[in-house]
Structure formats: structure tokens, C-alpha cells
Length: 313
Image (cartoon, rainbow, N blue to C red; front, side):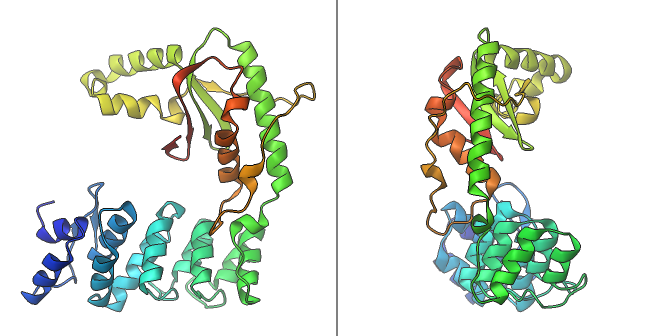
């Protein structure tokens, strides 16, 4: 992080950035470093740290105003590649980045549809991205139809009709309720079969329920220590292993049971402000909201967590 501009942007230091510009500095062909150590353009970094709370909208706006159109479009296009960038995408659009700019004859909307990023598609449509604009692989509409993905076709159609709908509007809420009920039943049966284990985490991994116990984790850790030695004596490394769903020892068999009375609270399904949750996020929220009932028969630790999509709850 030796580049002073990196420090200024990450600290939200608009005065130092103005001084940088007044002394002849530029944002073109400059690489700065994001909090994860990756190289970024100044505008990309500004959006990232603003979303993270250490930057500032004033800095993002200043860099936006002093950047060329290619830099603006490139930043939006880069973030549109994955939905986990959605907060950065929102900041760029709010700051004024044109949603229909193209990189190598491909717009951010076309990329987001092709990559299957419903939240990004929704946000771009809200800011006026054109579903019919053609590009390297056709229009966003043609890409959605080619992938036979009804969700994106419906979202794009809603924009064409003048009323943009979010991914949430197309979720079958009754299906979410039924699946959560099945998950709850399966967890209760699993708990009955594993009274000898004390669980510290349950999670969702690739659409499946997974879990790990203290006993199983100690075996996994011992295995990693024998293979990799000192690398797994670092506290942060051990925590990463502990909550890595791919290393959990239990996958929960799905069972159907009418014998278990459901006491699930479905209020988590109520629309939120700026609602854009998709089915898997609603299921995650259902587990979290009903954790007291769903996991009450399971032997758990005091710091029991739910793991989903790279986050711990």
C-alpha cells in the first residue's frame, strides 16, 4: 500500500486527493490496492471502500468526475461479473456511471445476464440499462432466451414494460416454506441420530445442508496439521478451516416427515426495503430467523453459528 493515492482513497481523504490532482496527478493508468491486496483502478477502489465504510461518497464522486468514460465503464463491467460485488455496483450507478457503456462490445447488463447475476441485473435495469441493446453475444434478452432462464427473461420483460421487478418478485414463496419445513424436519431427525456429537456450525453449501461438530473438526485439524505443519498453527488460518463448509464432516440427509409439528415463523419472507433476495437467501434467512426452534433438539455449542455464502451468522 505504498502508493499514496491508495492511502488517500482508502481513508476517504478528499483534501489529499484534491492536492494530488492540483500537483499534476491523474487517475489514468494508475493502479491502487484494495483491502484484499488486489490491484484496482482508483474508481473501483473508491467504490469498494465507500461500501466498506472507510471511504467516502465525496471521494468517489471526485474520482468519477476526473476519470474518462472508459475507466467508468470498465469499473462497472468488472463489478457486474459477480453478484457479490452488488454494493460496489450500486455505488457506481448512484454516482453516475452510465449503465449501457460497453467493453469489447459487451455491456454490464449482457455480462450479468450471461453470468447469472440476478441482483446486478435488477440494479442495472433500475438505472435504465437497455435489455434490447445488441453486443458481442447479442442483446441481454437474446442471451437470457439462449440460456433458457425464465427469471432473467421475466426481469428484462418487466423493464421493457416500464415496471422493473426484482428477483424477489419471481420467487415461489410457498416453495420456500415447503423446503424450509423439509429442512427443519431433516435437522430434527439428524439431531436424534447424532446425540453423541456437539455441533458448532450448520451451513448451506451448494444448496445442501452441511454441519460440523467439535469432535469432527479436531480430526480435520489434526489431519491438516500432519499434512501442512506450521501453516495451520496460525489462529486466522485455523478459523478459516473451522468455518469452511467444504471441510465440514456432515451432510444432512433430506427426509420427509409429517410426524413433526412445525412451529416455523415465516415473517422473514415479508418484503424488505429495496427487496431483491433470491430463493437461497430466503432459505438462509429462514434458518437464521427460526434457529431457536429448528436447532433446539441438536446438541450445540454456546457460540453456535450458521454459515452461508461466505458469511457467518
